[in-house]
Length: 236
Ligand SMILES: C[S@@+](CC[C@H](N)C(=O)[O-])C[C@H]1O[C@@H](n2cnc3c(N)ncnc32)[C@H](O)[C@@H]1O
Image 1 (cartoon, protein in one colour):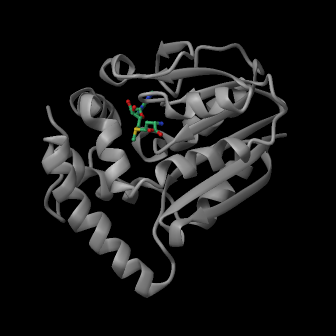
Image 2: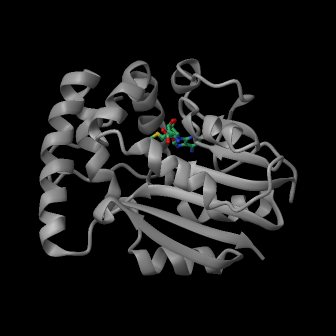
Image 3: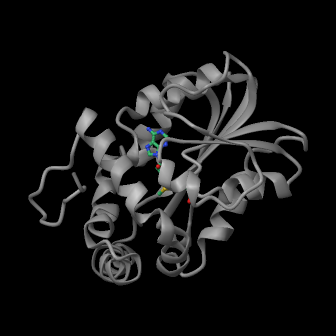
């Protein structure tokens, strides 16, 4: 069944239903995902991903998981920084559309296919709000990272300043669904995208959650007038 959340009073899916609908949605939009992404981010997404990799602050050669890797953009940025990326995603469609030389594994973010403490770093881009259990995902990251390992998680955000938020709302909630519907040929998916930010806890709660599951030196910065946030932490 398609993710269909086009009216303000539609309840967002939860649990098993969310898992199935999000997976099916990414399978559908995969062939046009990169193109639509470039357009709706006004080309800024590349810069955000590079900042995500730099924020790891890991020496070249680090083994880094790109969880929910999609078509592999972050894997490519990791490789360009001299790291050894491995991508994980549950959408066969996104993996089939990937354009990276990094090894890719089909799997669930909540059950990462690595032993405890096996990786130096984890990145994830625009996926936190898609997970069924955000705390479960962060606990799984803490399990997979070695002590001192680094997490760098990029996702959408809401500008704090009222004027900026109004402009962002117009872009994200009106223009993005229209453009995504036209270019991505999937109006439901690009209506869901802005609405899915409602799954994300408030900034202060996100930081507290990271600390609670075992991360130290937790940081949060925003880009592009607060429309995007980057959360970082060190496995304690
Ligand atoms: C918005 S895309 C982001 C893709 C890529 N990280 C990027 O920056 O372009 C979200 C990705 O999360 C993946 N995803 C969502 N839930 C997942 C889960 N539970 N396990 C693995 N991948 C998941 C989707 O298949 C999709 O590829």
